Image 1 (tube, one colour):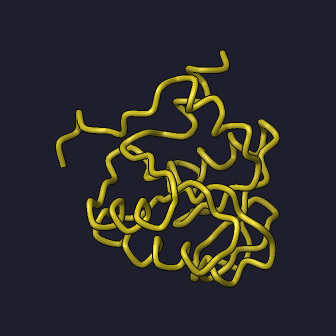
Image 2 (cartoon, one colour):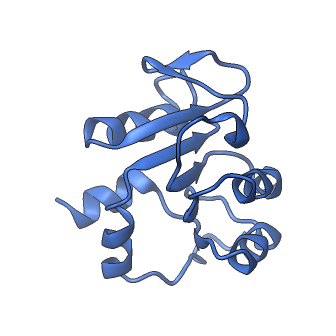
Image 3 (cartoon, helix red, strand yellow):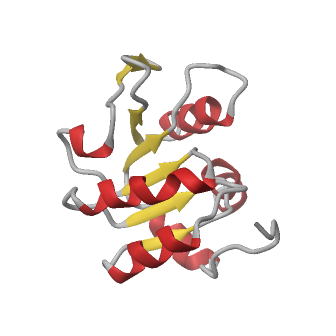
Length: 141
């Protein structure tokens, strides 16, 4: 992936996205040094409802972890993805089966063109190659 390539959202559009509070984090980790741990931890500390999605974990940061998006019993606004780019399409397919999802957010270094196309064709907004924590820090310092 071209590291410089990312979505074309303006800062105003990004700020509006941060009004959404329910974030499913796909690939959330229980290892403190990994972005899949410290990014969601930051979001929790800033008032977001983070829902871990990782089939290998039962709980992360005191929150129940779900094996996939469809298993989450509550509504989700944003799906924040910490997976390899080639693993993104099944995540988007799961998102399409879940009511209420508005945003697919692929973290820094992650992009899948097919997944972006599928999400957009089904009315979801897509962000890619951006870190949710870094963007929040930049916009709301």
